[in-house]
Length: 119
Image 1: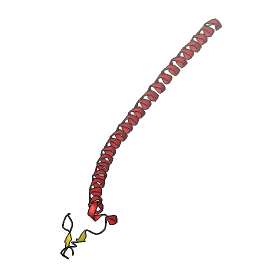
Image 2 (image 1 turned 30 degrees about the vertical axis):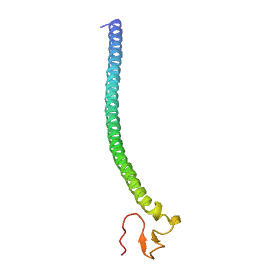
Image 3 (image 1 turned 60 degrees about the vertical axis):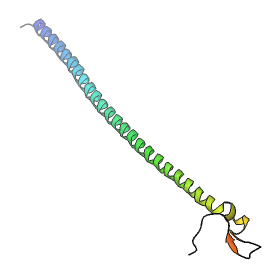
Image 4 (image 1 turned 45 degrees about the vertical axis):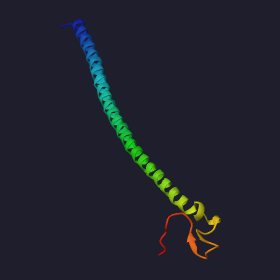
């Protein structure tokens, strides 16, 4: 073989190597990109699951807080009723005692109101 044939063969081999390198780089790049895209998709799924779990936890907490507040409001109403019972009219500390003396008979009686047992 003469030198021109060797030069042509070397040029073709160089072109083939360049083509192989380009195609290999392209395939390697696409494989890395696909792998990165899959990892990103998996990460996004995990984030969405976490957000959904946190939303559900907040919903449960909100329901619990609502029931606690409702219980506290009911307790406040009951406490007001009890407080009003102790501080209404004849039981109010500024109105004097619930006991009164009938000036004509000398008998001590109780003004209107519930009977409170003395223990």
